[in-house]
Length: 142
Image (cartoon, rainbow, N blue to C red):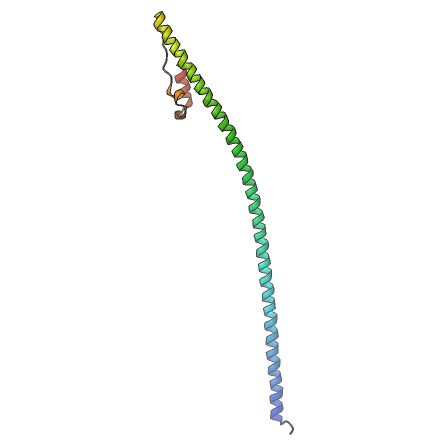
């Protein structure tokens, strides 16, 4: 039985509907591919940015490490100088005590009046230096 014109219209209508559906599928596939490509590109860009950030942070860490080493060496040098100065203060304080003791004995034996200043506390307790170091020096000179 031949196809009636109504059936032919439906068949051609079905095929045009199918073409529209196929076209939509093709456009959706292309759109999805493009979206996936953009997503991959964003991911790649983010990865490159993170790699650059890691390199920058490593560089900063290296610079900080160098600065820490320089400051540590300076600290150790100053600490060694302070230890030397503390030893010198101890030695000089002891010498001054001995000299003052001899002067007091000389004063008693000879009967000569002398002004023997008391030792400043800054010499016996150097960690308690006053805010003005010149005051301590002036006290010692008087």
